[in-house]
Amino acid sequence: MKRHDIAAIFNEMADLLEFRGDNPFRIRAYRRAAQNLESFSGDLEALASAGRLQELSGIGEDLARKIDEYLRTGAIVAFEQLKRRIPKGVFELLEVPGVGPKTAKLLTERLHITTIQQLETAAKAHRLSRLPGFQAKKEENILKGIQIVHRGRSRMHLGIALPLAQELLAFLKTIPGVSRVSTAGSLRRMRETIGDLDLLAASKHPSRVTSAFAKAPFCARVLAAGQTKSSILTSEGLQVDLRVVEPDSFGAALQYFTGSKEHNVRLRELASRQGLKINEYGVFRIRGGRRLGGREEADIYRAVGLPWIPPELREDVGEIDAAKAGRLPSLVEAEDLRGDFHIHTTWSDGSDSLEAMAKAGMSRGYRYLAICDHSQSLKVAHGMSVARLRQQMKNIQALNERFPASFRLLMGAEVDILNEGKMDYPNEVLADLDFVIGSVHTGFTQAEAVITRRIVRAMDNPYLTLLAHPTGRLMGQREPYAVNLEKVFQAAKTTGTAVEINAYPRRLDLCDTAARRAQELGVMLAVSTDSHSLDQLDQVRFGLGVARRAWLEPRHLLNCLSLEQLSAWIARKRRRAA
DNA sequence: GCCGTTTTCGGCCCGACTGTTTTCAGTCG
View (cartoon, rainbow, N blue to C red):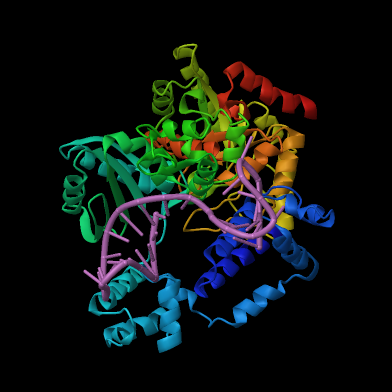
């Protein structure tokens, strides 16, 4: 995708300019343009050939010309020139916490240091203290920063970060004088991975809280400890930032600390045009300094004439304009979900029985649960033969007779999509199922055209209701396969096939931006957990996070339908093929 | 480099913490 390439170049140009100590607002313009290109979902080349690139927000005369240049020639001369003027590999230095562009520049110009390795050697030999503004303490801090880099500051997925955050919040609540606590930052926005953990607390005596926090058992090292703010490293190497404010400022601080940074910049710009100032203590009139609120988050938005914006939308991807126009989506909530479709049991590779899963579903208030164990060719997961599947169907029917009418188990299967898009059970078997999931579990390295055709053909099958984990990615383990999602979405739309947001925290597949694109194209989506045990039904919250970040409303999700509506939706595709 | 209920030039979000400063620059979020 050309727009990703151009966005990457603009981001790198921003880095290069920052390193040179260029005008910070110019740097921001490049970053903002890059972000807007990333979230733009239309046809960039069509826009360029119509000479309308400047209609994009953050793109003016100069950047429009650079985009044009890239689309015509495949390169941007200004970028190539900029790269040549800056020593290669120097960006490595910026990865060290505490080393910014100014320090990096000093290190390369005065000491010819361009790698972290060289920096470490120089710091240990006390060669840095020769630099202006450097003394022993700063040298020491750089060495500590290098250690952090070596330990690897890899991002943590939500499935680990969220439970951990809840433990830390529970600890904070035990500190005397703490009246309110919350997560903030990317965790509260439900980003799929978290770099560091941001927590917020309200107290009339902030410094008592920060000092108790720094003495907590999970705290391995204190990175910074002030009156109202402290940063620590846990023994697992995770950075936790805690901010403590007066109860009266809790909402303002939560808004500020939740971000994203880009969202806050937009909001504060909007405020300053109205003669207002927003900071973490509240919202104020610039003239006279009168405070207009800040105890609740909604105070801040109200002051600039906006409704409260859900955290998942705060990425500066159009949410502020939507709020202004009164067109924020009514995001799907946990209570809107009436069932789950992707459930494994002891009949294949799950660890709980049909009945146990059903009861867990009922106790969540679900109206239906589709049991979808693996199909015959997936031997490693104890895929079911046709005979075993038929037996399971009988057992499900018997269970349904015993269940209250308000709840149904659906007879389903997660059927492998074989080569050339053939399904792993014959159609006469699929026809007897209530719900059919199709997934790819083999041939992950197939070329884009091959794997895309394979999936698109499978969706032509009238019995395939839901395409599961459409890219096959496993964060930190396996890259997505080379599937062309745009073509998959087109096919999903024309065939009436739903596409999954798999809630398993390592998958989150589709991801937020892809799910938003699918919705824009009119594709029906579903949040399902891929549960292999009872407790995994809870993981729906991670999928819900993705759905909300994708701006989805209940009407966009198959599992917000009533059982009758769901059956009708499935029947429509089956009829169309007949 | 972008952009306009303050503007086509002069602004551009705002504050905490650290180290080395006797008034502030650099970094971070």
